[in-house]
View 1 (tube, chains in turn yellow, orange):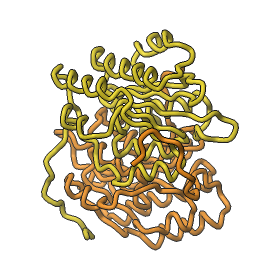
View 2 (view 1 turned 90 degrees about the vertical axis):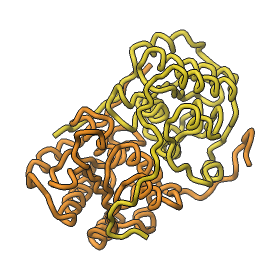
View 3 (view 1 turned 135 degrees about the vertical axis):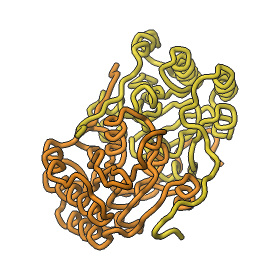
Length: 204
Length: 204
């Protein structure tokens, strides 16, 4: 039986992030750095066009970064957000980035998190979500499936005390998706047509 | 910078699963084994009262199991479902358990997956979800927060060709949650009262 799994960043990430400033105060600059990671992840053929980073809200110190590693690590949950949040928790030795004595943490992502990652960020303890956009552009341009987003996702964030900043570097993020689509890179998780209902013991 | 994270099963799991039959054909028997893991995870103080297992649908061969490892592994996404799915993918060397040439796989869990795990199972490639129940009992009895479940979650499963079996060993699962509550064990992720809205750049 397999008793453990791990998710590893590509080798190019560490040296790249080492070149980042120690503190990144502007939201747009934080997003630009995340977009750089997403772009390079495609160029290096190490994953999909998605990246994320955890910063301290106030000082803008980078705590951890993530890129999409589904195919490389054979792990369908290794989305950029889950990777960044898990690495931040590993670095700080906590499962709750919002725990007592810790500074407030922000997750910066280059689009609205998918159905899974939306749940993952709720459990992570981050206090701020910053995204480049939330519309259908990700799915329509790249072909990736984002899953059923909760219709009240903004309200759910607010009710849990998680701030939301939208449309940060939106144009650049959409351009990245368009460039990805034109690159002919792999879409490992394409949207599928609805299938006929499977047999089920109790389907409403 | 931290460049990898891992999630590890408790040491007692391997020897326990080694005692399971090679093939488990009845759905109730699969769930009973999952409930045994959930119960022992609490008794051994290695995580919350949640467990999951990936079986081949037809033959009932166990591919991988998972238990809740959030606190032990400092990883808020290490829910039983994510652990079981990731270990199954690691074992088979695939990110898609529904890929070509593979048998159909089933995820057996001792309650409806939380908001995050619902998304995770959509991306995993499983073709069947079997749960002990889906009502408010988990939250009301244990105090754990399950997050905002998509209102059309059953329809979303069906439209993606994922079968659903509900209420398998429901009574035993509820009893387990009641026993957990009375044990005074840690609830690492309690439901919280809604907080006042945080500042936000664009809140609808």
